[in-house]
Image (cartoon, rainbow over all chains, first blue to last red; front, side, top):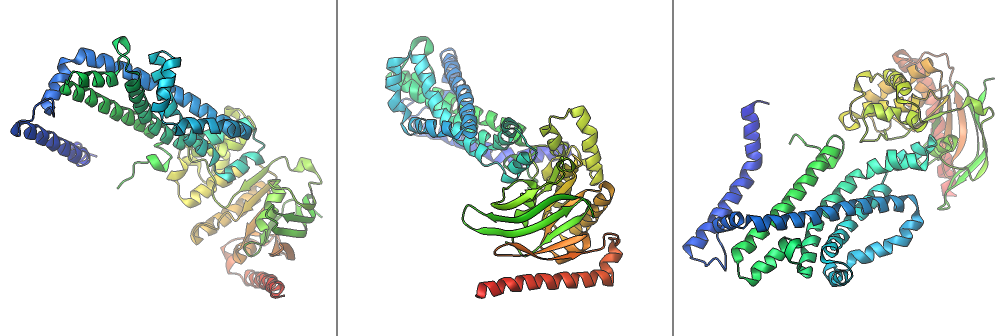
Length: 266
Length: 257
């Protein structure tokens, strides 16, 4: 493929969404200016960008706090969800015993558990636990489905060759479950951020451990709407980055063989 | 008289659902033969194959291997290629060796050899999805052959392939059989395929599944395009087809009662 070809290809791919975003932002800016909307109602994109730059010290510290919690929770959810799913697949009595607990944790709105966790734990740990709890279930559920839906003929082939239960698990069930796990991870990644923000709102922790959610609440009290938008922008960008990162990881692991990740000609 | 590898005596199989799949089945698998189980769908021919492989347990009768040392390994080819999509061709063929905890260095030449046997030497690094249906089936056969099994079981392996690919794989199978001397039990519902390949055809009827007739074909007949066009082939196909029709008619009679 020549350079100009690849250029025109990437333009046809990324051009339209970029153009639409640009038009939207310009329209937003124009409406705010023409209608003279005060910044405490709706700040213009330019003002949000300026605030982002001006308050960068505070905002990026908070971003770091939120990122730490999100990724810490996601890592714990991956470890916990995947290991539990493997134990479920290996021994059905484990599944029968523990699945009800996992489901109860899943169906109870996390925001309702947060106050209790705040009584038991310090604010930082409570927020981390909340984010973990929401990210954990989709990873567990998806990995469990993946481990259980292995091609039955392959299972028989393993049995025919007298494979041990561990060989069957590591050489067959885990690779077969990988696409399902990745789907769970993508959902869990987004939920970890939502869990972290929701728990932070409930905790209302300030000072050193103030995340982006606290900045939003704080800005609301001070009627500093541009800063509120700036914090919101950072949260959205974080969400997008997590999604992009996990999609890239999925592409890397499944790209060569799984239907969900194959880059087709058309 | 050749050695008997597997002997089935009065074998019956009833599934958990209560379906009677097989009853009173007697069958010997002799060393070096190409035995085909031919019958309409639902007659339990795949079940017989799975019983021989030990993938299922008989509900009655006995299945014995008179000289167990003769069968150290069994190769099994399913209706679908049944490859691991995440593994390259090499790793798919290597699987039986890997499950035996064979060292990679020792396994590699065996895998190469098995791939060469099915004419896929250059494809060790490919992923299954990059191959055609016929090539995937060849990989599946290479995997079944990699342990050099004394007994190779094939369960309608070419049913989903087009006729051209099917004929080529039929010829490959005959060549492999001649080169390796493997005993083969083959399941099909195609009269022409069964006559072309086999040294013995066991014709089955359904509900309950049982063997109704056996037809022996001289093992020294050449199996090639000339055989496919010869009057002897035509006559054998007619005989087999008539036997199959009779088996299916018996079944209709039983249903009418």
